[in-house]
Image (cartoon, rainbow over all chains, first blue to last red; front, side, top):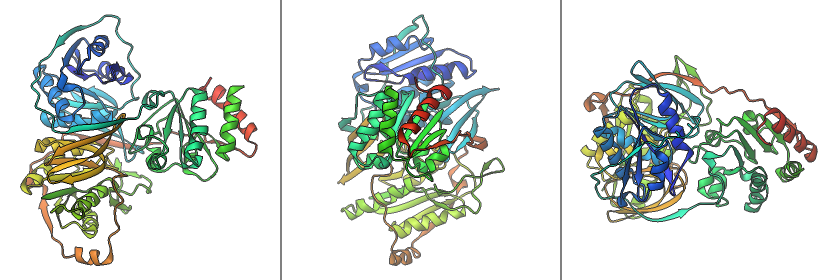
Length: 316
Length: 252
């Protein structure tokens, strides 16, 4: 069977779950798709997951109220073994990438990490993924009885939920106590569209001048377009914006239909997080800024004049 | 206590990527210690400077050229190094087995490694090492304190910043923002030349890569690069909006 671990947060199932379903349907391997829901108080998530897999396994346990890579990997490895899964699909979110390697080690399985495509070719799984700060696409392969695959968010077109609900089963897990205590959480819920799921992203860099400039120009333009807000590492380090908005090597990777970069020069590490966007728009005062090299459209000019003019034009 | 800082040598981020022989060509290119790992070396030094009675051992697995990065870490202040010399390209899961075995043999209490390798774009190494050792892990550490055998700090997650507490032994992955790595001073560079670098061969560790590389291609998505002059802001804005609506069709 293909074991698909359902990503969810705050009682909601995300787009990533339907992307995993798409990866499972297109991988070209036999066997039912089993959706696994791990968490506490996840009945609503399980009900949704029933429209993803051919069957749903639910581990609804108080110990799973908060993510922990040791608990998650132990649970997934146990269920994969019991169900004789040949392929394990995990979303390559931060959390997913923190526990999928442990699953691979537990099962003595290869890990195809953060893949943009994956296909069975005569028993061998062949995958494409990005490397060298997203500047290179590598094609890798693994031939094994069990393979762990983490799937890049946004790389697969989400599968539509099946009309019929699959059967649900509760599973029993042997879990050891967690060893990393989470003593606090600064949730950076800005109430905006999630970056990873947005079709449009407006992102700002130091070139917007100040936190106020960011709010006025970047957030202002994003509001006008109904877009998510992104930021560079420099902006986040300066405390202007929360880390959850950071795009780049040490932040999120996004590939929206359009990425509008405001006052961003285009450091390699930032480009790494957005270079797969379908359309890239850059506004910067420096005509030699590297960002223009990656842009489909751009304006060389002062962001404090160009962006308000854009907002005005969009309001017309 | 003993801290293991894992380092890898990667292509400098400012270098352009070239492909030869169906893999990324590193010949004659500027190679550096992966900056993500540099934060780990620096953090180990800081833990000691803040009072931890720690020996800091740098571990590197790779061809002879990796010694440059090893020497850089020793010049920063690490005490000694282990270099497993090999030309075999290991994947993260295979490499974790080597590091796990070294950590056990060295009776390490803490293993530090970069949160994402700049060549692999992988985040798997720290977690895989932790699993090899059956230790807990914390990824994307941004602040860290050690009191006795208790580590506390903050780390980045998908939707925010968490505070954590755990007991040694553990594996932590490091990233930009955790600290500001020091430049080696001349006296430290001189001193580092006398530090021990123990050579080892990969054969001793019995590992084989499970993932095979078929080939690579450099990204070459052609961009339109229609760049307008913004001296007349309203005119440029009008043109851009028109292009985005009618040509690109990305906004309404």
